[in-house]
Image 1 (cartoon, rainbow over the protein chains, first blue to last red):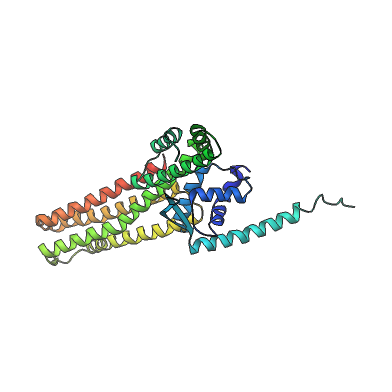
Image 2: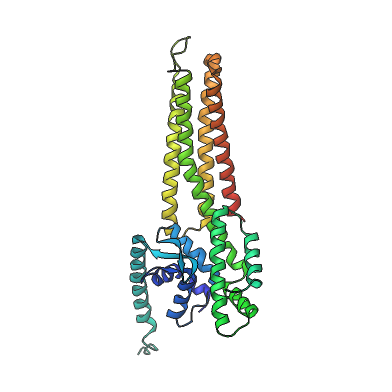
Length: 112
Length: 226
């Protein structure tokens, strides 16, 4: 999947990876790749500024901590981030339901 | 831990392209470096040589032309936020210090000798007293607005430009009222401007603060255009 198609959804994807608990940046990238079956083809260097943007928006909070003997910046969802994720999921379900209704039923029957 | 070489060169090139607050830049680069080291380590575990593992990690991180603008936007936004917090605290503090200085060395203002105070002078002198608090309110509201705009996807570069314009407007407002009072006082009762040295120095310091904020505001525009 190309990065252009992902860009509009990157914030929601990042919030979703943090739904289960705090993660450091590289673990977020690994989670994105694992949960997408490797389909998310995004320059990993664009993820870190996106995380800072989410922090600026108050959707995530971060701090330096030691993970496996190495200092890493770890991120966690804030209350506002959880609400934003919930809204994004609802909007996505509505969108996919609508598109599925149009595209998902196979070829349209010919009109008489 | 991956060895020095390809990653060092990449992080060094990224560092040279970025401009902004040193501690934020160091923090962003440290995180980028950690990520590249993690990626290179995982590729080395699959049997790649150190150099190949680092090249692959750097390749996945992305070309500098793609990656650097996002980092630069966050640096510009961080600078603007720090500037607005500085404006919010420093300008009222400077004003309070000037007022305390004036009350200690001069005492309460007395009426002009030559008759009733003109209404225009009352307006500018009272306005000059309110301006620092108005500026504090504007800076605080701008910080809150920045967070809301961030949630609407407004880029760090745009926020930095807006912050710079707001700060420049605050400087213009503060200087306009202050100069009006000085000129008005000179017109009505010039000897009153001959204040004790500590009060004059506090007045000069007020201008130093305004000029400093003006420089920071200009830097917002520069950093958002890198």
